[in-house]
Image 1 (spheres, one colour):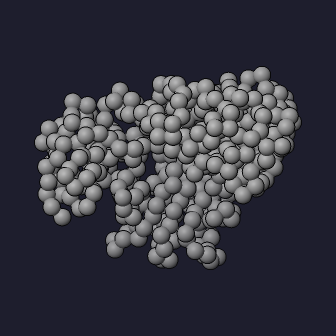
Image 2 (cartoon, one colour; image 1 turned 135 degrees about the horizontal axis):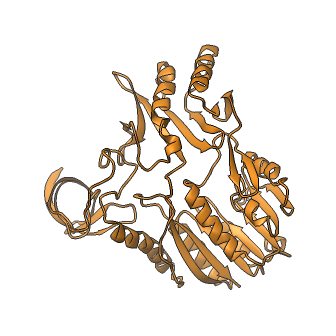
Image 3 (cartoon, helix red, strand yellow; image 1 turned 180 degrees about the vertical axis):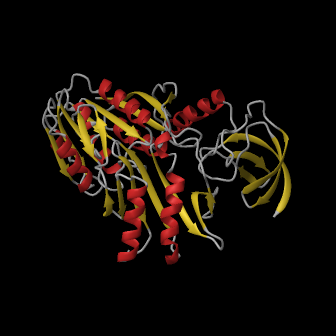
Length: 408
């Protein structure tokens, strides 16, 4: 490891500053363009020792754990520059794939903060540490409060410490997924190992005292005081344990608003990778919907929620769209399709859709690179990408959501 003086050229797509050296690029977290820094270098990575000339865009972070906790990468960057950089991630991804389309301004969808979080717990010599991982590390940073979380998760760390302490005898890595619901906090434990009767009894007592809506282990109910639900317009969805939701309520509303606007006038819509019905239940106010996802629990929750009064028919079906994408012929009769795949995108489904005749495709993505790849496939198949709107619900991170609208 050698000490070195470098100038930061730009911020990379993972949020680290990038310096150019004779031996190639060097990635240095928590630095900004134009800064001259002294680093300890190890390969293509650098640890900041001293900032010789801080950028005029540098601001004070909002969190005392910033720079130690790896959850946020960019609290130190002035908002205007940060927002331009995050929009630029989408522009650059499209350019790499040769896809041309107008990209709108970044939409701030942080709202009250993140309503779900996965905390990590590890046993130390003295106690149990509960928090988030350090930057590029498996070391847990013990945290008492996180300013990017919604107020409903304010006690998540204290509750996590209590649960982890009760399971610490197992000496296993433990993850705790917290989700804020109408019924209270929904907590799913992962990695605890089998629970004996004493552990179950102790955890059930903790759940009651902390007034958790539900406590599960890998989806198996340990204790439940109330049904964890979320409201999606007319419908109320009872969440399966560990269910996926958009990170912020504001993010869900923003993405759903763009989807509804793009689907206006459609009477028969396919919602692919539908989850618990973030889009399907809203679209069903004006159109019939075929909703498909591989997660059988999520599909079941959607089907039950779709019985709410005032909704048009929703056919909810469990199907692995990675292994069995809808074929071109199966899109017959649909005038719009919505895709909201996980981070890896929907390459197989995009190839099938490119051979179909659906007039409009609305693609929601959490990864600009996989979206751009699939956009190229759709455009090569005869679609035109009319526009892309980037959405920021993971403030201070390198993650950006987007909605792209394609027309035949």
